[in-house]
Length: 168
Image (tube, rainbow, N blue to C red; front, side):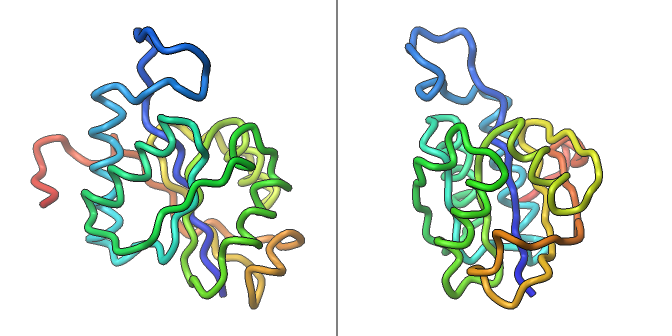
């Protein structure tokens, strides 16, 4: 069974001089959320084997911060197809990028993650910034991902974890 992990980028900084949606960075809260999720997933033993991120600055930063904070050895790659993707495109990225990974993490955006969660489970989900969803897919390989369904294994939001708790 393959586990697909979806991480929505952290809160972005709307008070910046950058031009264009792709260039929008994370704000401080988004950076803290990414670090929290990186450590939480490591403590849970849910470290991804491979990470594929949207090329948007806020998504790539979320992936990098989570990876470094959690001490994940997983490689990080950027897939242009995840920016502005729909569920089918996101599953195509998973099919192409999963290779020998048991746990594949895609880092991206709304509304794609909510639509993909609905596609996989039939349930209605709204994925807030910094949230991780993990799905156990009904497939034997990533190549079959595009026509799979799955079950939600867990949903984690950074606010679930007390700011005073020492994650390290």
